[in-house]
Length: 336
Image (cartoon, rainbow, N blue to C red):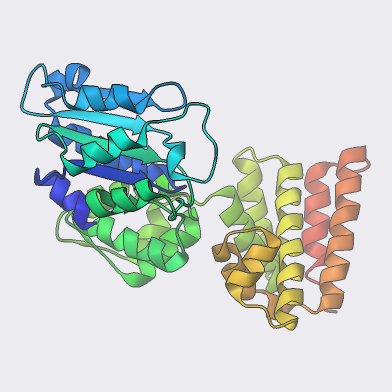
């Protein structure tokens, strides 16, 4: 991100507006500003935070116009500025004071508004003024393509490179949890070193699979009727102390999603439309689209009935839980 590069070089602007629902990016940007604008020994004195659900904007503005105790600059952080949305705040804030500050910001203060909201009210005068005078950084949830591009940028900022297929594999294994993605990227770049390339094989060898990813692979093996590998994945999950009932629940969730995706595709819906109707991330829909052609509606009905029966067997203790899972998987290997 070019704004992050500017911050790292010490090229700051007087005012930042961070908004969106992806808290990881806002926290990361805020940490960058603080750590590059203020000496570590001065943070206690020259970084202050105001919550506008409890404080008035004038307090933050007065702080911003007061000289720093030590060092050449200070950071004033203002959280939850509900006045930028259509919501009604508990405390009425003085917008004229903020508008006046925007016209003539303090030369020794970096003023940061942190707005954890999906949308801002673009009709409001203060929103327009902020977008004109402040550096605006939007932190919304990722699409798959944005995630892969962000992975590439983060890898390169760490001095390494990544193959497109490796970035895709990373998203497949980790999902869209940005914090986990960032941790895995940092681990991978440390492993390969500067000016080296992260390959798909390196990702698969170093990145641990989530339970959900293992269940997705389990479904894939079931779809392919590769029962030995399906059982192998199941035994691996049990070895990691995953509860059989949790595995069964995830299987049921995945097959239910397959049915829903197949039905919506039959009606002509696209990936994002399906995700909106079903209430899951588009990435999960994309993965499901790879599997549904292997099932007829009738078979999906049958699978869901069998999963319901397996759930009953587990919860009533009629059969040992591990055996219930084994019988379900082995039954899927029969030709229909």
